[in-house]
Length: 170
Image (cartoon, rainbow, N blue to C red; front, side, top):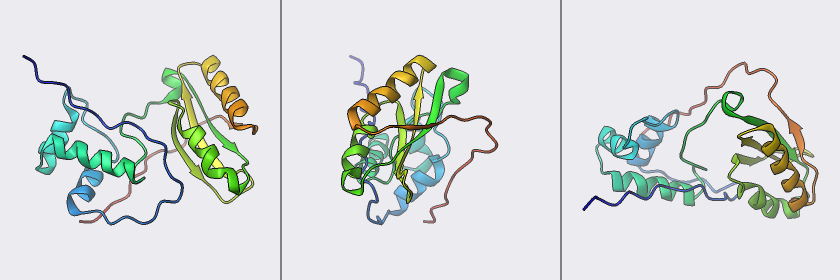
């Protein structure tokens, strides 16, 4: 009988402005090693575990916990949208008292990989990615209908640099 497939962490809506979190050395090491890329293998979580000297089950437990407390938003690939579909940076101007509720609506879309608050009239910013322009337009229209607010669309014209990582010292 085959071993059951492991359960992988799923994206969860985030709470805006989470309180500072104390991370243990293993959590910091996991984030340091893999914040800019995961192994492209049939067993990425087992391979991650081997690299940092722990078990696959513990890696999955850590990643799930970090998502639940809002340290990470998702675990998965980031694709170049123009190569595989369509995307846009988007923003909504939301009254402060509705921000959490509207952010939860936006975060529930599978097409949104991150969502954050900014100090501006347009205070909720997010990136929407879809397989094609028609789906992207449909998702943006649904968001407007569901939230009751117009979405400002800021599509990428030319990419100059993308490479973000933060060292977390153990």
